[in-house]
Length: 499
Ligand code: NAD
Image (tube, helix red, strand yellow):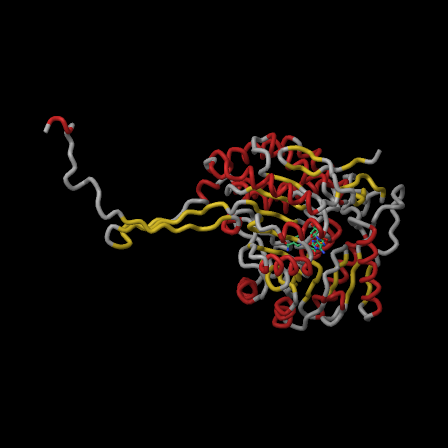
């Protein structure tokens, strides 16, 4: 019997009533290891109804008590980190160490959300006019939703759920149907931590489930992360339906390499940032931009040498650098891009196609691929490949490198490696990209800052996590109060019968 992954509604696992299902693979072997239900519209509406019923009592629970649930959740997750990481790795394909990082970066946002009592404090002005005080409060929205991608099945659901729940909302998660088990376990651990039933729900599905969420007037806000076309679709549909939305999309992150940079350090950073997690990270570096031919020639040689040493294999093998891609379709898509790069005239320095791992012949593997002499008109430069493919796009000078990153359709992350503080400062100030690394290849901001890309990498005006996470999942009420008369004048301090 193949394992059936349940929805998680009203505090418990709920089997599907719908009928449609999708396969969940074990990317390392290529085998189907479970089936996930694809919810019907009625099932999704039932989840929303359940969340709506649970939310008022949770909103009325004081923020400190809500925060204590998060504290217990943190302890519970730490206690089963190894098992959770293995479960995550077995469905996603990333290594177990990388899966721990996925969980850890989610937990850091939960840690931040423990500060909810402070973060939800409003503003206060005493004496704004004669006898007038003005204050504001942040109130939960009600039922809110998160729709999340396959590549961080723990981190991104927690980035959404943390602020949503801490602020007093009920949360409906529609995780990726490709690696859905970890979100269900997170929901269970929240219940063990003391979260009331109905406040964190997981409903699996595809477009039918997503559209049902977007059309339901009881859902007040939707936080999305995934590919750009879907991010844009969800943002527009939510806006048309009067629903608050923040939608984060794809990326093509550049790393500018100045001639004064330490090229060994750069090459090491690029190998990790380009090929880690098989390149299936929205903050992966996929374009190296060496400045000047000398820098480019030296960097290409160092990268080619290191790429040869990368070890690719099953995700549960502790000795591999990265594991398989998430599906066979993903391998075929990336292989298609490699062929396109060859056809368009780029120089293929390492070709990862056709990699077979001994004992895992049906796994979804792709070796590290490296292109040089890539130009800005090529598809492998313009489009997100989302695989273990790094391209070198040479720039003549600093201004050209800056322009390439700034003019690209995507604006998620970018980095510069240099020893020159003035160049780094100028770059950080002028580049048209949302998150910048200076001698840091993957500049994912820590939990108490906010995360968000620009241009086609992000739709909406508030970022994820940090203070913006709380702003997104709350609405501001402002109270202007005036007390024209009170008991101060003529107040009586004796018992009336004494008069
Ligand atoms: P995806 O867009 O295929 O799926 C994301 C979510 O949307 C899933 O829950 C999926 O079920 C749902 N979905 C898919 N097709 C849909 C449709 N037609 N209508 C409605 N919903 C639909 O993305 P993915 O392949 O799971 O994730 C990889 C992508 O996510 C990459 O583009 C990556 O760059 C991006 N990503 C971005 C960030 C960021 O913060 N900017 C972070 C992680 C991943």
